[in-house]
Amino acid sequence: MTLHPDMPGERLDAFLARSVENMTRSAAQKLIEEGCVRLCGKPAKKNDKLKPGDEVTLEIPEPKEVDIVPTEMALDIVYEDEDLLVLNKPKGLVVHPAAGHSDDTLVNGLLYALGDRLSGINGQLRPGIVHRIDKDTSGLLAVAKNDFAHRILASQLKDHTMARTYEAIVCGSFREDCGTVNAPIGRHPSDRKKMCVTQRNSKEAVTHWEVVARYRGYTHIRCRLETGRTHQIRVHMAHIGHPILGDTVYGHKKPELGQDSQCLHAGALCFRHPRDERPVMVFAPLPEYFTKVIEKLERMG
Image 1 (tube, rainbow, N blue to C red):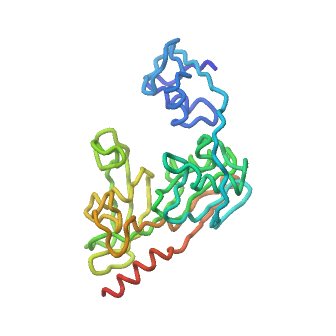
Image 2: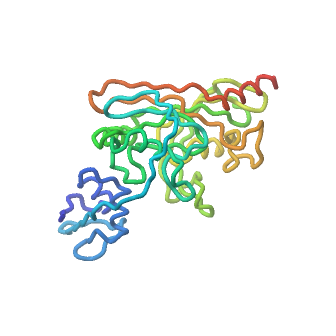
Image 3: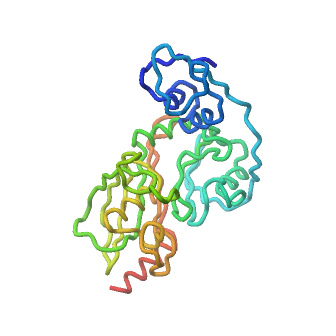
């Protein structure tokens, strides 16, 4: 496939994602890294800037077989139709296969339940996965059954028209009843597994929060994501001095109130249906681990 850029100065990976049907930017970067893309006859780099007259040659390899074993598991599906489903993920379940988790992930369960009735845009390791939440975050996750639905839902994520609301217990007390954290997030300079608020190689990140209830030393808050960066709520809350209860990565290093992982739940998901644009609003009640924390806080006075 030969392409001719039409926007001088555009990055190569962004150009491919815009120009090739069903191509995501991450998929474009992977093809570039694998040597499948040439710029004016030479091996390309993902951050190459395009100029008038450039010629981009793309070779898309045949898909490789990936041995992901379908695994029977209980899926708490709270909404489903021919194009998509929304499920309530429990705390502790990894979303897609990765090192150390090859056959015990949500994707394994989805493949058992749906087989090939999942979108393929995110590749063979993440079929159907439009967005993800951390292993130890519970709550709602949208899954696309076809590429059409996946593209529309992904575009709603990108333009911030998919509303995602989270419940969290954070450490400390707020003076205000609501607020916004507008601070860019990027990779941590010394710990590549962590994110941080930084101006260097970062992306815009905006989290709106409001107080639900106040307790002695802790606060129940509700957060609405305007953007969707990795670990966004966890990083933003720690940044303003209110780390999430149990988050030993970004917050206090020792477990508190019996919580050794973040007390964070994706409780509401609202979007326009890809097929007819009708509003879809899905809610998931607070899970047992979360309500037990609230009961402890109420007893503390």
